[in-house]
Amino acid sequence: MWNILGHETAINYLQKHSQPGNTRHAYLITGPGGVGRETLALAFVKALNCQNPPSEGQFCDRCLACRQINELRYPDLMILRINEGSKDLKIDQIREMQQTLSLAPYQSNYRIVLIPNFQNATIGASNALLKSLEEPPSRALLILTADAKESLLETISSRCEVLRLRPSSIQELERYLVEEKTIENQLAKRLAHLAAGRVGRALTLYENPGELEAYDEALDDLAQLLQSNLRGRLQYIEKRQAKKTASREKFVFLVATWLSFWRDVMITRENARVPIVNLKQSDLVREIAALIDSNQVETILKLHEQSLGQLDVNVNPRLVIENLLLQLPVTR
Ligand SMILES: [Zn+2]
Image 1 (tube, rainbow, N blue to C red):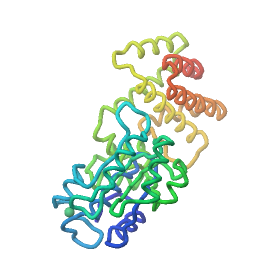
Image 2: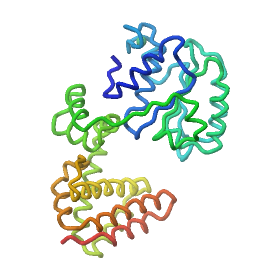
Image 3: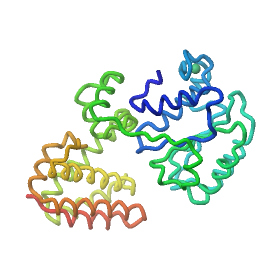
Image 4: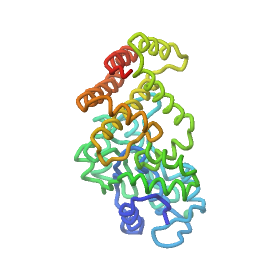
């Protein structure tokens, strides 16, 4: 048992590929962030290297190799991430990694490199990686993850075994959180909705209650702002801006959270058979959905997406939020 929620097809596939003679040089695991791409990649690495596998394609999770992999300190596994403070994976990082990849492994059959979120590689870094895919060193194993196959160069994805992961259903995730993680029912339900079926996202939220609180706070703010006049809204921005902890990331979080709320309003308005994300605020969602029409919601959604785009290219956060708030309807 790999003890992973969902992804049966991908698990079966990787279990077969962990057997001698079946392993390829490159894998690409795609799916939305938090769906479990890295967990699956690491399970594959364990299945490849477990010293005491209970049966074919399985791992024990207890031997030295399994433990070292769990703790991300297995000598033949390198995880290549974007440097802190940087937005993309750079060509120098790929070149350096290629040096490592060409060395013989210490103890494994493979020298393994995992590169999460390869959609964030620069075009230079992508082209540099191609070399490792076209002429892989004999005992090299590359595992990439990305949001979608389409966000990588076709020349890269076509040289990988591609596995596509989808989120679980909300109910499936909820049950998993209750049964396997012994999370209390109400909270499990809320986490499953907030994570939209992505198990990794749900567990991250669970482990960081501060993030859940920040969510609630952002939506409480929105509820108040919708009832405020322009002066009240400008005051709000001033207060946020003056906070010691104010940062671009905080504003991005704020807008992204509000965006999730407006999506819920849209879903509710259209009676779409899609679960809403902000279960705890469902009353407010219904209330607002009854007050405004579809065109308005659509405009508001676009406005939030534009704002996120502007924050991404370093437009002054204050101007972005100001512009956003002044265009929201007053629902008093
Ligand atoms: Zn093991």
